[in-house]
Length: 209
Image (cartoon, rainbow, N blue to C red; front, side, top):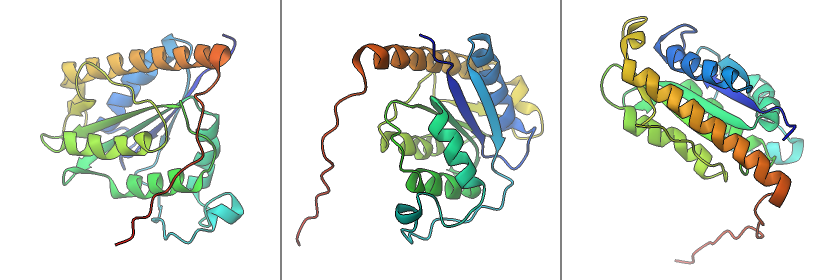
């Protein structure tokens, strides 16, 4: 396998060096140790508006709002894996990150099949499972295998640096990165030998009431 594998990592926190970044840095080190190219991009502090369902992306090939979402789309297309990380707000992900992901997945029309996805969440206490589920839906609607770990992909901390004390959470991130690495390498080998899975023409069922 000659391909250099790449992982795009999106930090949905508004803080570049907050508790969410602790989780991503644990993963990043594992990726680097395994020869995986990584790029972490801070999303949570950017001015990103939500999708307005105008449909222009089907004509232009990109979102009509020309901000960092279109830049991310180019990086996403080149990547073999995508990690999306967010702090938990009211048992949900950062709204800026959700606006970004809605537009990123909807406006980018390249084939995402078999790109590996992983979501990571950080909370003081509760809401991790709901946020984890929310983020995974972007992958499962796009034919992207979802990487798992030894536990749900969460880390805990409220005050700056507190998540550094969550030994189990950090281990969960390292295990996640190792599992994701294995999946990406296995898929790359599978593509060489077997190609991508056969796809049928898409059926969109509209029930008549």
